[in-house]
Image 1 (spheres, protein in one colour):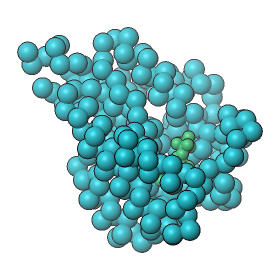
Image 2 (cartoon, protein in one colour):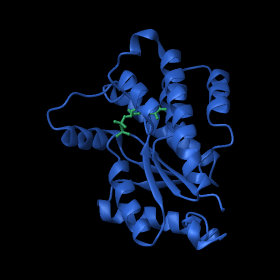
Image 3 (cartoon, helix red, strand yellow):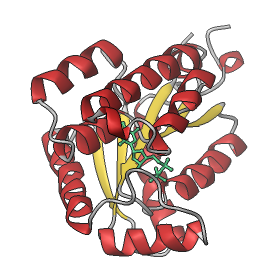
Length: 224
Ligand code: TYD
């Protein structure tokens, strides 16, 4: 069976990743693709257990390295339990955040040693890099405003609560990754109305699928 397609969505807070993933998944399913929508930290029972520890801030007092390792542990479980099996059966996997978030949040703005982060990435992700990474780019001020609106009266999470200056560094760090890895990453502005962003996202995904049209189609359509 042909391997599926692995697409990740990255960007700052309030960029609208979740909305875009939901729309795209609906479109692709209507065309007969098997689509798996998932997220990090989380996505698998083990990953979701760790998500709670991380986003509540319970691990913050143990230090940034501890948090980075927990993100990596959650990712390992997620890859083993969800991503790899889905790709093996030919599905399209749409993942809300993945390793670039670790590179940015822990590596760049967490100021963790590059070598430490590199080794951690190698042992957790290895060859399982996304086929496409869509970076939804947003001015952090606008992103945080949207995130606050979405949250209503709820409390900010461990990473959202940081200073605007930190969010600005993160935005730049995502753009730097895209510049370094243009064959994997595409930057799409999240400022226009959601419908317009959705069109740009769909165009990028269709371009990838068109390269290998059988990938991401369910099993009975091929190799049987
Ligand atoms: P989530 O509620 O999923 O936020 P968002 O809607 O912004 O994606 O929270 C995930 C938070 O965890 C987010 O602030 C980014 C952070 N994060 C990291 O710091 N490192 C990582 O490796 C991942 C996957 C997420």
